[in-house]
Length: 263
Image (cartoon, rainbow, N blue to C red):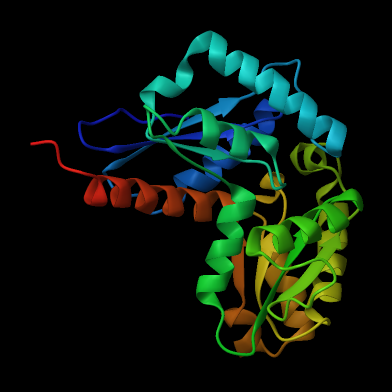
């Protein structure tokens, strides 16, 4: 997916670090439904076939990082963009590597859908409310919990009053694009959502996998079984891709607004 670049626009690369083109197309469909400013141009990227088809553990994170970095260095692709969104819901090494390597001279804004989702939820919470994550495999429960606390500067073993935790579905990212029957996806996502909502005063639920893009109705339907109708309707369901694009657009504007003028 791409849009024509217009002078002065914010050019964002949505980078899928796995090799599933079907997942990238799912991201593109979700992005198409956004009310994007005419000053934002989006392009999507799928990692080469050497990258895992689905990122399910630490080994997949490292492999996808190596493959994508090699490809980006070979193609010099990032030279045409103002910002990059790493579309894997994890503490993905690509985020920090790209932030360090493209800070100067290009000054490209970089974030991941994981980081963008955290910041979005914190901006939406009212006093006493909490947020949590519905994700895929069991591996991610500890990985994401540790990642949230590290990102927010919460010391190991300390309480995080606003974060209710992570519930997993037992699915893989690739399951959302033809790998598993829709009824099974609905059942497993619904079960994980209900477990999360029973943990506290949850007002924001993050879809903790890029492959979940467009499946908000499943979470809201599960919420209607736990909450009364008004509260279920008010539940915020955060899609990290949408959150990330909005954040990167503002980051790029801020850099332009506050940088030193060289007139």
